[in-house]
Image 1 (tube, rainbow, N blue to C red):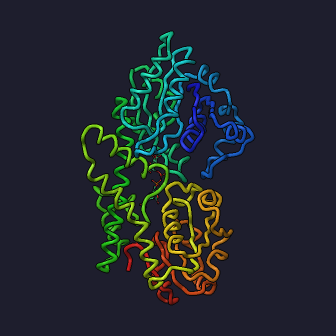
Image 2 (image 1 turned 45 degrees about the vertical axis):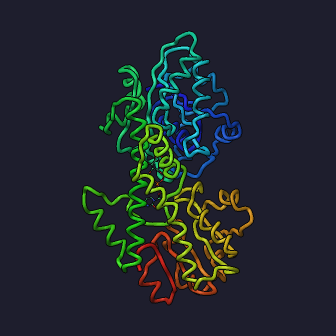
Image 3 (image 1 turned 180 degrees about the vertical axis):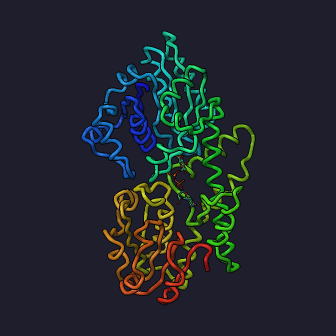
Length: 435
Ligand code: UGA
């Protein structure tokens, strides 16, 4: 078991830090955001993530997990340092790695004995080399260290269970010694025979982007097939099921919808295209997935306009679901943002409700009306649009829904409602590929 410091307490850093302490390591989490650390010291979790509060509580109580403001001290005392700071998209479509490089400089200036310095943030292929160069520049006493790229495959909403039961661990390392250190960090998983992919830094960096882009491709592909199903009267649910039963395809990530969102797929697909361009390569398939995803929310707006016979102005539209997917309060790149913007352009009136993401969306759209229940959001609406597949919406009482609305018009962009029931109740409705 190792003494670990995690720099950055966002989704990846916090879940990984708590998860690694649960494996028996001694973990300190640090962040430049003082307020966040203060909250964590008080036992408050700044993000909505199933199971995280319990995990943090259990491990802080047993003194394996600590939060601190003192980054330099945390660097000095660690055997393994995880870099888990943000890499947002910059204006050129590439990942902004400035926060990573700042951390690398600080590590170079502070390093006092052998450590493994490990990047968990999603960074473009080749960033590992830049990090090493910066550490070397500031590590004037030539203190020995190794570098590791250990990408994360956590899904928001399922991050804790994904961390505890991963499909694989990828370790891109610069020496045998650092591989042994990292194996020790993940000891319980190693003992459980979780596949560990021991490789180079560049290959590990590539694996992360290749995985995310492939999943994004799958989603855009199924969305295009669903759009075609709309036109020819086929049922995408049955098509997806049949595709998924082929072991070569697998049933995962074949759910059509309003397009993929979140902090990863939109950014990572663009960054991969950007990296390829540097080497004079075009990622045609990834570009196509990006384009399809750009168009998908627009298609949802067109569907709604059709349902309302071409007129959205002054119509009251209830938006159910704001987060980019269920089980998270994250609205980054959420398709709901694009739909709300489109509705605003058409001068529709908007009422919105999300079980946990109202506050996150208020930061983007402070002026729309938010409600605290679906019942209150749909009251007197001319149409309702389901944007996120929360279980609460799957289980809505459709008789009650119809009674509350001004006119029973519904666009189900996640295909979660029962078509037969909608038909029987006299709803005018549309979905994605299930006409
Ligand atoms: C994604 C990956 O799934 C993780 O493995 C990865 O670690 C993470 O990015 C990351 O790079 O940090 P996440 O963005 O949390 O995780 O969410 P996903 O569950 O992958 O969903 C992404 C988007 O695709 C959502 O908008 C979701 O609604 C959409 N989606 C997903 C579909 O439209 N259809 C599907 O079948 C699956």
